[in-house]
Structure formats: structure tokens, C-alpha cells
Image (tube, rainbow, N blue to C red; front, side):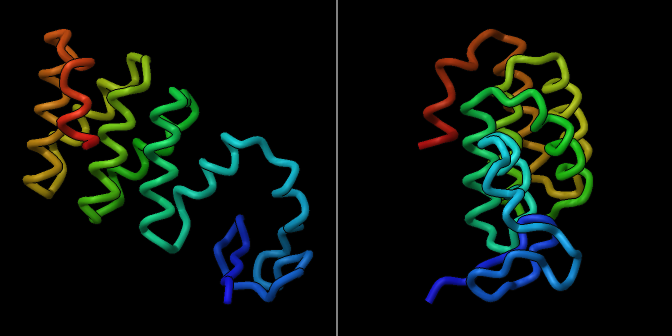
Length: 138
């Protein structure tokens, strides 16, 4: 049986619910949202696998809009696997903001996150990022 969630507040919904009883979001509006908007919303999904997948796809798409969300995630999140996906995705997005996000991650409470951020920054600044992506995404 499938589980349905409100794409705005992630409250579990009954199938065919048109309006979220928790936040009042018109669920039908989500269907007309852009692919990028749906992926950005999925960064808050209750299932970790969905959040990770959304971050990976946003990075592959080069979503500039994702960088603001990624910065917020770096500041609040503790799940290493999600943070890893966010850092790798951030590094893939061609924007000066990616350096700010990776620099922010070098101060994260998790040593694994800090180490990955330093490694990605080193790769970006040395021009080796294209040679190294397989190592992180494989």
C-alpha cells in the first residue's frame, strides 16, 4: 500500500485527498509545479532516501535555487548520508555560492562532513573536480 504525504508539510494523507487537513495546502497545485520545485520540496521529505535522491538530482541538474536550501540543510542536518549527498551536489553546481556552502560545512559538528567538505574544496580549487566525481558518487 502506498503512503501519501502533503508536499507542503509532509503530513501523511489519505489517497485522493485534495486539501491537506493539517496545513490547508491544495494538493492539486503540486501537480502543476515544475520538476525543480518538486525536487526542492522533496528535500524535506520524511523518508531519507527521497531527500538524498532529490539532492543528487538537483546537483546533476545544476540547480542554482537548490544552493539556498543546501545551505540551510548544512546548518541544521545531522544525517551524514544526506549531508554527503548535499555536499557533492553543491560541488557540482557551477556557482560561487557552492564555495560558501562547502566552507560552511568545514565547520560542521561531524568530522566526516568536515573532511568531505575540505576534500571537495581542494578538488574544486585544484581543477580536479571532474576527475574525482566517480570516487564520491560510485
